[in-house]
View (cartoon, helix red, strand yellow):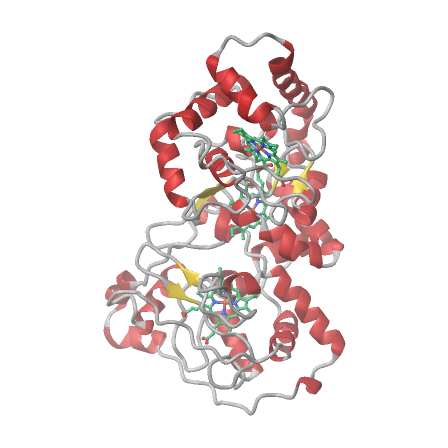
Length: 443
Ligand code: HEC
Ligand code: HEC
Ligand code: HEC
């Protein structure tokens, strides 16, 4: 996940200037407490907190993955940004290096307002612009869960941000410009399920932090909610009516994808999306996942768009069956048959499970071949994809030129969209984002 762009709000600082800004930017420290005994929280509350933590992927950003990995929640996870690396905080209850001495009030202030216990403004790579929407009850439960985790003594590496981005006081400028504080307010024109889904999606689950494009200051663009964005070398597709895949993301497809990581008519959750279902949303009450699916079926206007699904499906299945039944003359089709068709072949009426239908997958329908290249280069391990099926990495087996030919061929034969451009150059760029050759490489 992550590598989200952010920028300190120097502009905001300049704008306001002087004392007025200081008064806005400066916050008092909240007094230390003696770490609360684990027995002071009920088992029920801790379990509710576990669910909130899973719905906010706290472990994903607060657990080190380099240097051989790290204990859960102990921080030091490296988030790369264009300005330098940031290392996440230790949020275990260790009194010296974690949040053991934080009162619930200090924890709530951090989640709702992006302010550390000592008063310092937090960097918006921590998605407090979403966590601000969480109810006090959810934050209390989350606090109970965090305070009952094993304490780990671990200090994170210093951030590598250059002056003046490293000045916490100036982070307040960003807040001034882009941060809207406030708990989620239910929309009375919608029912309880919709509001539950909206509360989770906009708040703790922060779907927009990957799926909404950001401005130059790293804030989500307000008029472009869920328009799709680039994250860690992948495209997080639009989740609104601009989603280009030919069959609609309706409530059932969304539920299957968010719960199990695979939707029958779309395919699997790969790359930065993979942990969302596999590590987190598969472990929370299914009503919550239903609520999120219900909400996004509204956001993408599924009720209206689904009318064309049957035609789109028939067309896709038709395109995909052609390959193995007709003699192949097109050299690009030959390349596809040799490398891919053995697994990515379907015949009517619907795709077989474990065999994603590329004609329906976002990989071919997005504005750029980014996700197609990532899938080809990395493959899918059993952990990140569906249980029991894997796709080998073609990192070594296919050159940039081969990948460009495959991309052009698939776009031409499986979609109704204009061709992609600069395919070979983009293949090389995608290859450069794959730092290590994936473990499931069989070539
Ligand atoms: C997208 C990555 C990301 C996610 C997800 C995330 N955090 Fe963080 N968090 C950060 C970063 C980065 C920082 C450090 C910010 C800084 O140094 O200014 C941070 C800081 C914090 C702090 C402040 C600690 C301190 O010492 O000041 C708390 C508390 C916190 N996170 C709790 C949580 C909880 C609870 C969750 C899950 C609901 C969570 N975070 C999810 C990235 C994340
Ligand atoms: C860390 C970044 C990240 C977060 C957080 C995230 N997503 Fe995604 N999402 C992605 C990426 C990247 C993809 C593309 C994955 C692929 O093509 O295999 C994706 C794909 C999807 C898709 C498939 C779209 C398509 O057309 O194929 C859906 C639906 C989706 N996400 C919904 C959500 C929802 C709902 C949430 C919040 C509960 C969420 N995502 C949170 C990054 C993220
Ligand atoms: C050995 C079988 C196999 C081969 C060969 C193979 N794939 Fe795959 N591919 C899969 C499976 C299985 C998945 C789904 C992975 C998962 O969900 O765990 C997948 C997923 C994908 C995806 C992502 C779809 C999604 O659901 O997001 C794309 C794109 C893709 N493959 C393209 C290709 C291309 C292009 C080739 C040829 C260069 C190829 N594959 C070769 C088995 C294969």
